[in-house]
Length: 256
Image 1 (cartoon, rainbow, N blue to C red):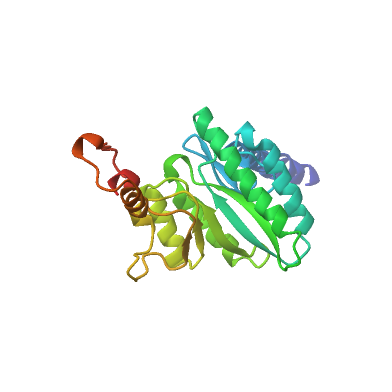
Image 2 (image 1 turned 30 degrees about the horizontal axis):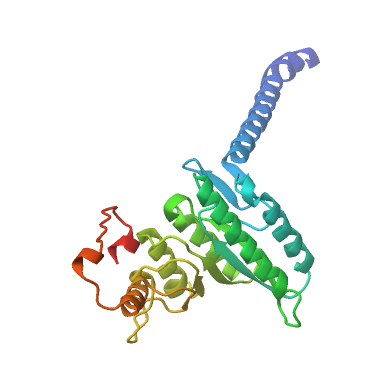
């Protein structure tokens, strides 16, 4: 009887069941491992994912987005962020395309990030509270992937720990830049300080009205610059002027 029970249940049914369970555990572990590897390959750094060949996202822990020109200053920002992490602080995001294809663009980017770091460093050593954390936000080339980054900035604004309170940067006058600024200011109510965009469409009207509710600007618009030049030079004859036309789509700088 015992021999029959052994051969019927233990040696056959139970053994098969244990074999199936064991195989399921092994297979599940393999699937989990492969998933982790794939997720690692898709992630460039904390808060940054690989998308359409670029590293897109938000990071303040020293990641340089593959641009060696900003490696040193990215590390300096991370050190300053760590220094004030335990103190009452707010977070400001610097939103710029952080993987320029050309040398001139990378040199300009380094100056932009260095300037932001120096502002952070100085602010954190004044007798004011709260302290300032700085994060770098890469919306991709031409701000084409800005929606993902704005989503992440919205999460940081809702996080008591991150306490994101403003976004600065914005160096290209493009339709995608306008989309990002509109959503940040009007929908998410996150103030924006625009640094080098000068298209008329990226400013609030001079006569009143709010195209962007919570926008501050650093430089004049195209219209204001043109008016200043015209006033400086006075009346110019036709032969003393040149008209340049650019027909690139979605470039609101040349349109204005």
